[in-house]
Length: 551
Image 1 (cartoon, rainbow, N blue to C red):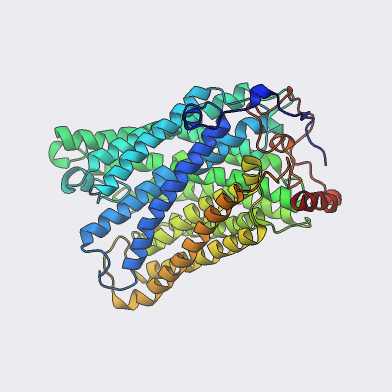
Image 2 (spheres, rainbow, N blue to C red):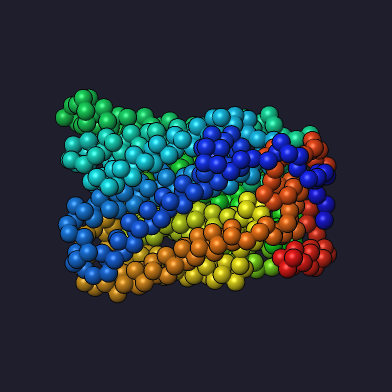
């Protein structure tokens, strides 16, 4: 198996780092910043997950019996959405895995702006703490989209404070995206041409472009809400000369590209896992690379498909419908190429591969239902029903969260230097897949039958499907908690992973685990293309893998 030539030696003394709280909080090492993000997003994930659990318990019965009032339910699902989207899904893969791995993958010693990288984490934490404070002291009841006139006229909750939290957190995304773009352009190792970049880097580059170009629009949108609420400026209120639909245009101009901020990094993870565990070079490397850039471009052209029932013209609806069908093409290219990579591969079903295969299945289901929603006739029928909830979660949870867990399992030996128990890893992957489908597939049926989303109560004939959904959520919760437990327990063991337990290509696998402070002891020169796997070498590579595990 061909790999770039990197000389690995014992690290000199000046590579050793302190392990004090101060050294972590003031670190400029991209790997440590990635670990800080990992701890943070894990906390927010379980906070948002706790809110989702309460929602599912409430919806087990047609009448409200867990939460006291419909207003409490409104605040709960709003905070669930705000926490999960802005404080988990958007930063999860770029800020955690991207921060840790991107410089390693291109042969750089760190990101271009190490201090700015640490600053992005502090900005994220400040926004997140404000979000938690809002949740504890009353919450917001507008829904995570902050639609007007709910957010500007009718809500008496902490909308302005929530706008501040989202505004601050947006700067974290902008700083991270800027850092990634500059790093990829200026810090690639000699020989690391654009078409020798791992697909992980291509996807994060495209994601960074969306972060830089799209996030300021969200910031402007929430600032305008605050201005109207505080100063009575007529921006969205028609009585003051404003336009209430303007906010939807502004919000979705950012928030549909934001879907790809969450999903494109998931594509990045799957593009690394599939060739490694199929022992084949990735099929159609350039097509997958260019499809990432195409997704970034098309994502800014389809926001209007969220507004088919908002009063826009029929002709605008037709244009946005066509564009929404077109944006599915680059995503389909990736799925087809992953499938072609698997064809006749020497496939090994380790935990990361199970998560990657689960991602492909769940994302494909979400993508196909997205094409249904791109059709005006179907969208009008199921708009604001549980069909939308199911579609969104198949993309975000079935896609992004599955990919994130797959990536954490894949690179955990590199991050920690330790292997997790494979049996429990496989069990958690299967529980997550089964629990997810039992949770959200019934919601497609609920939506098709007409159950509206965001309702505190529902008609009794919908109860059986809601009970199934709640039962699936309990299985899903167990599947999510298990990795946290066995990965933390693995830290109690001495390092046992070795530099390359999977027999993978890529520069990050050619240094010790965990990597030294400045990544490489000697300058790196890249001499071959990525994904130089060979099926003939699979048996030897896996035998080496098993030997490392046993050792």
